[in-house]
Length: 385
Image (tube, rainbow, N blue to C red; front, side):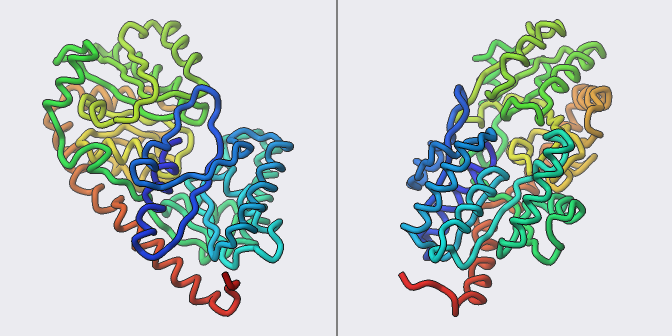
């Protein structure tokens, strides 16, 4: 689910054309969450599922996931193991160590953000920092999805800067949101949702979980309405906090002006209908929703965390505020609501810049180059097939 799922699907499909034979392994989602496996299916990328691999921490299930993944490594004997995201990254790299003589000579891990600050209590955060440092010493190369994520990990002592390579996400933006803004599609989506043409639509797309601070979305929209802006909130996504978020909208008195649309495989119609995207997350690696919004010509109001400043340029294609500052979010949204020309200018600026920076072809070039450099160094130790 989310940006990393898109990233690995596009990466696996593209590497096939570059001469790589790739096995994509994934875990299971929480109950009620929708899988993005349809993207992999469209790209003809088969997925090997390890059910025990799960987002939540569960020592017994996690040990079984390590064991089953180690078995798969011994069966496949890959030259390169490339892990993504925190939980799968830890499980995958531990499995590589457990694989014994089948341990891949090259192990790469991509940090799509991190969970080392702000996710857990201080004791668990300290433990996970120690674990990441230990795993980093046993990893051939580390990848960060933005310079900000790399710098944060270096500051946390995970590894020295020379161990990192920055490889930004790659997304088929034309496929996801279209090559150009589509006013007709936006108008039709508003009609289907019952939103009058003159209402200011604030959009949010993502996974409803604590780090996304969905409560701040609701608070900012209420403050925006208190400023006299006839705003409608459109939340696209699902997750463990959905019921809580909907109840909170009732408590804040904005539920009649809020739409909770659940997970949607086709997001293009919604970006076309938004006047602005809000992203108040406490932490982000590279927010796919912000990239997609800009590609659709929709300005973004986001928090200045993680890799967000690498995507959204303050005052150019959106606005950045400090985490938790819902008044500032409401003020920036009000500014966009009052100035259609500003919205259009920021939308055009975003659309002009993101397609090249976050293209799949650029991603493939970067990863192919990294793999070939690592393979060249490890030539003498490659196992025979």
